[in-house]
Length: 132
Image (cartoon, rainbow, N blue to C red):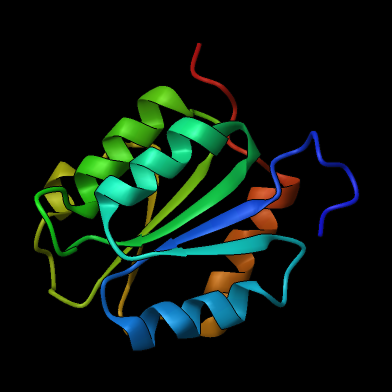
């Protein structure tokens, strides 16, 4: 656990495929971040509403089960929690990439573990600046 509880210290892994979610969570558990696994974007948004100031990073798939997809989650997070690093992934080619907000880093599937760890490092040590 992060020594300073007043700094963001949580990585949200939002993925509806349990195997991929578990793999991403296992990688992120090797970092300074505490990991919270969530299956649906709506649940992630609810979590953010209660714990948004504790979240350093959102690692989410673009395609998710339920009415909200990863792009919609990212747009809400960029607006309401502008310092959170947001990484979206997809194995569906360029589907939805034209609609990504500027605050999002895109990582195609299959992603490399090292790339996930680099994004976690940036979330902890180089957070996004607040929107002016």
